[in-house]
Length: 102
Image (tube, rainbow, N blue to C red; front, top):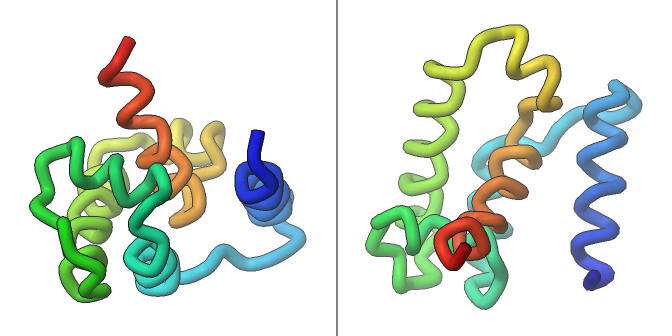
């Protein structure tokens, strides 16, 4: 596992435990745009978003589509159990390519 994955899990756990506030969806989207070689960027691409650009506005629009969809269709109970936050949504995007290849 990479150092990034470990840091990501620590950040998610701190948010899940209520020790710190989650980052805004915009800041997570900007991070995804700035790290186009990592899983979250590729996950959005695999989902059909044409984001083969590092333009933060394009990536932000794609990420917001996913957040709005999950926010609308996950029950409050599921959100609580999953620790739903922008970090969670980003982490799930990282796994899309792995799920597709199985």
